[in-house]
Every structure is written in structure tokens, then in C-alpha cells.
Image (cartoon, rainbow, N blue to C red; front, side, top):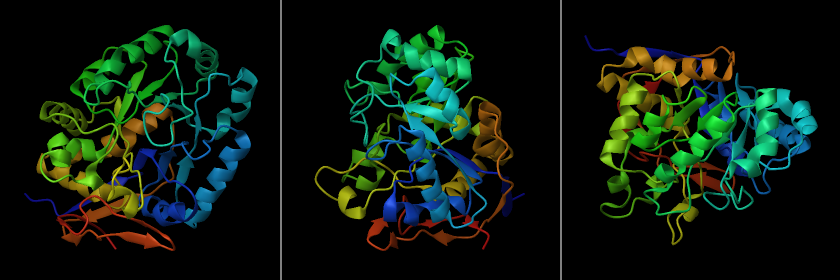
Length: 340
């Protein structure tokens, strides 16, 4: 029997870039009108590293979302020298701390230069004692297709050294990361919509598709298959994190294309289509909400999103004031729509 409607309760996006200024005003409502909450990345310029900056950013997000039933889950940008007292004071205002290897992705130039456990120990010990999760962009600066795989021993060293520290492998892209999930009790992960759908061939196999270029870069078919299998089964240690990363059209369609795929406006519709195609809709609520609630211990804002099996033409571009952004599937027709 064909399903024509589907409801998602308290959808959560556990890895989201909202930027700031007019871009925040443009993209913020495109998440807050359909999601109950989202984990907000701290890699602004300059990055979010103080309580004052964090609370001010949260206020700007709530203002941009204009009264929607939505909670931004805030994060700090990792530093080696956060004191226990500082983290204890800010603990209730954050959901985690995001660690970026220096220069590995957008606005990460002031990230961590060394991934040696002993170098990271001062902050990680305090986080472990206080129960603050660690979110990691897990890539080395090696050959681009191997960067995540090369990072696996670093995940293992941190997971072993700090067994009480909850660690989230962000936006995983390889079968190696999927396999590592079950090796350590304290390892969890997010996976994006686009990494469930595309491989490197979709990005660069023909004419370059700049709006599909992202970091970590899309990988091989066997990697996509491993990610998709885990997501469709709603692996209890895996949650949805869009890594929706808006850049203006002129920064995507240019020499030196910015890395990031913008999926916020179509994420729930495309996920519903994907899980429906594989007859796994019964697992979608777990993947997009329940797993994250358990992993992070959150009770989200109550919200039910109803989707209907009705064609929806994805806008070619979203615009506000001086900002614009092109979404994934721009101008294409997708088979599920949000109920108006």
C-alpha cells in the first residue's frame, strides 16, 4: 500500500551552519519553521569562544527565527586552554564543544594545530568531568579522499584516553567510520543528507557541480552504501546532522569554490522520500529525532511536521536583502512536500 502522508515528531538537525548577519536572517527560518532544534556550529569569524559571544549569537539566532518553536543548541569552538572553572560556568549554555583541526574546512584557521591527546588533555579532562560532549571534524590534511580514514586512529586514541567523554564523529563519510561506531561505547556520529545521496562522481565525474562540493568531500559508492544502510536502520549511535552550509551563489560558482551544500529547506522532504523508497519510514523518526534525544539527553520543543506525497519544485535560489543561496536540487521536482 502506497503511503501518501507521513509525520515526523520533534525533528532535530544535529549539525547546522547558520552563519550571521543577513545570511542568518535568510537561512535561520528555513530550519526553525520545520525543526524543533539544531546544534549550531561555532565557526564564525571570529569563532565563538566566550560566554558573552555565545549568548549574543544565540540571541541573534532567536531573533532571526522570529518566534518559531525552535531551540538553537549552542556550541563553543574548541581551545586547548579552556579552564575547568570557565567550562563549569558555561556548561548549561552549551550542548557541546566543536573541535576543528586547523585549516581543514571553512573558518577553521584558528583550530587545533596538534591532535596529540596530551596536547588536548587539559580541556578534554575538564569536559569529561563535566559531561560536556566533544564534537569533532575528523579529517587530517592528507590526500583528500583519505582524510577521514586517516583520522580514525585519532578518534580511537581520544575514545580510549577519555572513556567517559561522549564523542561525536561529525558528518561521517566512510564505511570505516560506520564500522568504528560499534567499537567504542563513547563514540557516536552524525551523517548528512547529501552524503547519503551522492558520491564524488556526482561532484566531479562530469561537469563540476559546485553546489555539491563540500568538506568532507563525497566519497566512493561503497562508502555511501555503508552510510545509507546505517541510516535506514536508524543505528542507535547515528543521528541526522545536515551540515547545511550556506554560501552566496557568487562564492560557489567561481574559481576557488566554497565548500558546503545547502539542504535545510528540503532536508525533511528528501529524507522522507529516501526512507520511503527503501520501505524504512518506520525508522525515520529515530534517525531524525529519537537517537539524538537519547545521545544528548534532550527533550526538544514539541513539534509535528506533516509531509504529503505531492510534487514540490525546489526554488532555484533563496534571497534576502544582500544575501542569496542556492539549495541542493535547485529547480528540480521532488516527490514529497511539507503540508502548508
